[in-house]
View 1 (tube, rainbow, N blue to C red):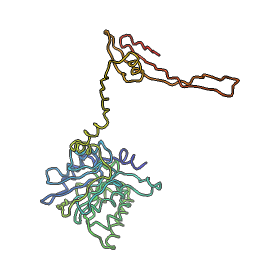
View 2 (cartoon, helix red, strand yellow):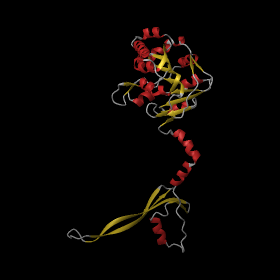
View 3 (cartoon, rainbow, N blue to C red):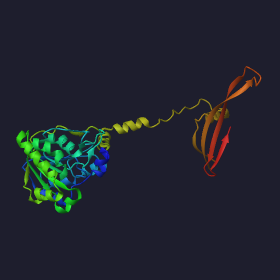
View 4 (spheres, rainbow, N blue to C red):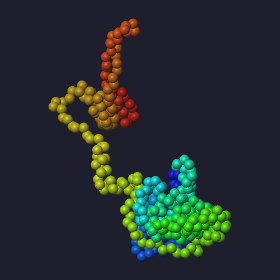
Length: 343
């Protein structure tokens, strides 16, 4: 499945409401302002629920324009664009990274070798501050692809299965992990092996070994420690640009340049003869709607050029022609719908 089609349509798997409510009970926040980020925020429902009642600043990114616009009513800041290729985000700026990426392969390079889940994880784990928490929602059998970055840059990695009623659809799990600068190789190798083992289990064995989400320990999201200097897409969202253009008055001035200006009104020194009026009529200077004796007419004048032979013929090597200009006036009678042509 193509990259954009996957993420915008088939790859859009919003977190179930039951899981959102359960996650809310497993996440606490330190006192102060905390920044939250969801690079695949959809309509913004999940992140807004997690942040409800807490002094947080919630940021989202969404590829689908309609969903991004709806998410703006729920989150502090939402950017419209491809989170993998079109976003510029400051590093070490967020206390919580909530990541529910598309479940698919990235085939934009023609190889189909990379899983989108691990590409999103590698792309955005740098935006998470040291000590901040990752909440990763993926199918459990994808753990083997994410095992290396999870084990090398995160500690306290915990994996829990979705509740039984929600697990059957996509076999999803939730990963809680705390961001570190770097984990020792020996410890990282051990965690990587454990995650890989979990991903190869049968669904029944996985749910038994990982345990249900309601058994998860509560995590505490830290306050923001670093500045957020950049959070924007490389392309312009018209819904954000148009109000700025209107406020600056640029649009009004631009539209004025495109409106045709009226021709200068010239008053002749003496009354025009009928011949003058006929030439103006044929030249198009009097085009438009007129009313005469109760009749409404639409007039269109034009002049066409025709080549006329004046000497020579079939048996002559020399043919002389001259240009002949034929004035034509077309008139539509609006009452009778009749078209008149005068030459």
